[in-house]
Length: 106
View 1: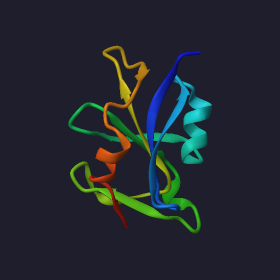
View 2: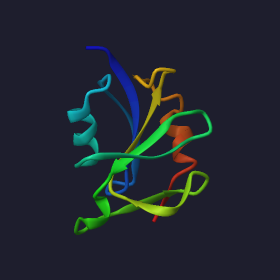
View 3: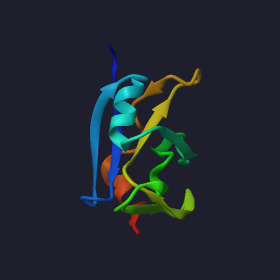
View 4: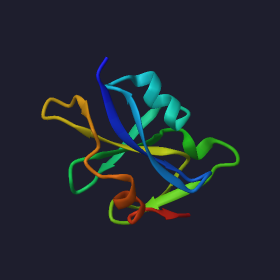
């Protein structure tokens, strides 16, 4: 299986890091966020931000914001991944250091 690079946003550890997962491997994507994935927006470069769609309903949650993408805090761990023209997963264009400059811990 082909691997792709995603950038994980972990508000519990207040860390942003890169991780390799199987291309379009839904179980691995769900494992990162700890639930069902939901796309919440696209960065200017076309990368998509995913979070746990039920994150707001979970106890003891931590939050982060990406003000240029969405003004509201997002619950739990998220990740950014790129996509090709057909929608298949590919490496995130943004690196963890550049993403760190966009993220605020809420």
